[in-house]
Amino acid sequence: MLGIGFKKVDFYAMFDASAQNAHETAKALLELVEHYENVTDKVKHIKDLEHAGDDITHEILEHLAKTFITPLDREDIQRITKCLDDITDMMDSAANRMMIYKTRQATEESRAFGHLLVKSTAVLVEVFEQLRNLKKADAIMTLLVQVHTHENEGDRLMQQALASLFENEPDAKEILKWKDIYQILERATDRCEDVADVINTILVKHG
Amino acid sequence: MLGIGFKKVDFYAMFDASAQNAHETAKALLELVEHYENVTDKVKHIKDLEHAGDDITHEILEHLAKTFITPLDREDIQRITKCLDDITDMMDSAANRMMIYKTRQATEESRAFGHLLVKSTAVLVEVFEQLRNLKKADAIMTLLVQVHTHENEGDRLMQQALASLFENEPDAKEILKWKDIYQILERATDRCEDVADVINTILVKHG
Amino acid sequence: MLGIGFKKVDFYAMFDASAQNAHETAKALLELVEHYENVTDKVKHIKDLEHAGDDITHEILEHLAKTFITPLDREDIQRITKCLDDITDMMDSAANRMMIYKTRQATEESRAFGHLLVKSTAVLVEVFEQLRNLKKADAIMTLLVQVHTHENEGDRLMQQALASLFENEPDAKEILKWKDIYQILERATDRCEDVADVINTILVKHG
Image 1 (spheres, chains in turn brown, yellow, purple):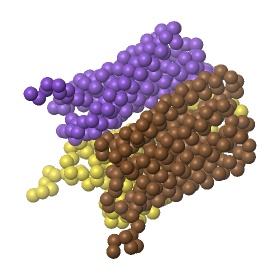
Image 2: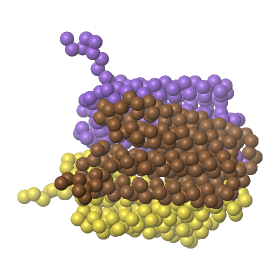
Image 3: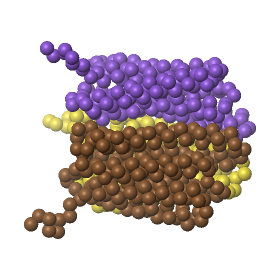
Image 4: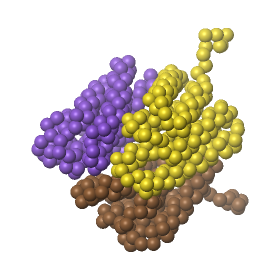
């Protein structure tokens, strides 16, 4: 009577949930920088999403602790979990810094980062939808290449943002604030790439 | 006649020593920021502790190189060793920056970080005392949760420190200095959490 | 007739190429900071080297994906590849920041970092030349110690650079620029050490 009272741990579904939550966070961040008003409320909403992400993370790790045979290498599950958690954390952190620093408005480059993170996390959601079907490696690989492209865009955006900041902003304090925010946002795009890298090695191992 | 001329490599004892040394360093750092005088001497004392930590680190890695069968996974030993080394390094680095930057006094937030790191490293000392007895997983888990709580406190403290800095300090140079110091201190609390994470995976594997 | 039409994947040769490319990049960076003129052209040259490094990186990872039995652990190959790629990336990034920030001249400390990175990458080139002969562990170990020494030099250099910057530069914007550049350069020396650490664990495993 296998199955009765038996709940199969579905890591893929939990990754889905975590990626989906990161994507929601990215959309909330974009909303914040596109319409920079009611900042406290919007930052609080992002913080709530971050807490939801934490819950998913803990759930995955708890299930991992109790699961003897895992569909993917234990270490890969841990890494994916940590990276997805980091992505959401960093977006929350960037939003939080805007509030803490009392920035009066969002910059064009912060909006560009917002768009980039929405795109990258959307691709990650797709990747995890397909991941349980490791046979579709080619389709997944194509998605991973997109994440890498986004990360390169993030690098270029960072350069452009810094150039513009040092060129146009006379106040060193303001430069300090935005440089900090941009770095956190860029790191979020790096983490999306880190997820892609882990998935890549998984495909290779099962290839 | 096993035992004659036979020195069993005790990784647990060496972890103990490294965690204990990190804890000593945290106490020396707290002493520095609580009584910010004789800075050069106190920073030198912290540097000495950092060197002692280096010696322990090298000893562990050397023993690891010569040991065929290890009580924990080789990689976990390496990670723990590296993280404990990093914690001490970062506290040394933060102290050093205060001296280099010629900061005239320590801030309230640097004292709060000092207290936090004393607490976190104290918990790590306890963790390593118990680690050789993997059967006591529950007790260890309770300690690990404390380290996570401390890391969260570190995050909040960082936010508060940055908010206060940008609010109250008019001089961008001073902001730059303290932002740098706070970031190093926050990273030290992150590393305490990294140790906790590795221990967590060990408990899971042996669970 | 094994061998006809058979191209053996030579990871050692590809590591050689990547380390050699990092070394070329270091030399180009040193040339930039020693003779700070025609900056745009020199930065472009470094960017070309970085792209060449990317190609080598992709080649290694592609071969890794297709190779069933690897001469070193799959994970170690990935880590070495990533770290070598990072070293070149960071030097490119530092050069790029100098251009973006429109720094009027290079500093003495940036030249010292240039020299250090030329030295460290030269040692890595030697390490990879010898790596295929794991029997020569002692000779390789001696080289690895040099990389560690360089990383320590990098730490001291960073401290000195920051001390000098905060002491002598009145303009917070200029401090911000150079602090950023120095941090990237220091991180490049850290990554050289990371490569050395991976090689060290390889020697231990095959020891």
